[in-house]
Amino acid sequence: MRKREGAKSDEIAQLRTAFVTGSWPEVLRASLLRNQSNPNLEAGTFAQLGQNDKAFEVLEGMIKARRVMIVDMDSDPRLDPLRSEPRYEQMAKRVGLR
Image (cartoon, rainbow, N blue to C red; front, top):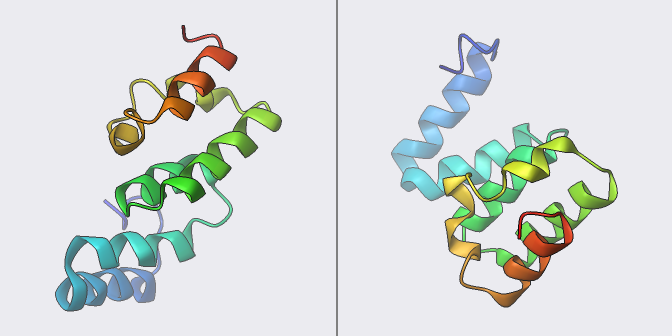
């Protein structure tokens, strides 16, 4: 999939190495380095890594920047780890999902 998205061979190799050496969490960490310009992806990655505070920071930044993708927060399974937190419900209300 990364190849189809235009990833360079060294990026693909880095992700493969991350998976072999550290499994899925390491791949997510390596992906964070690649996706610094795309906060839409970072929130879910931080949530999956258990870094909920960072995930909420990214979501807050998306709200402030009025990124349209914020309306998909309820349907993004990568954000599941955040759903039990009261601040998730508060944020969903703020963006009009409740």
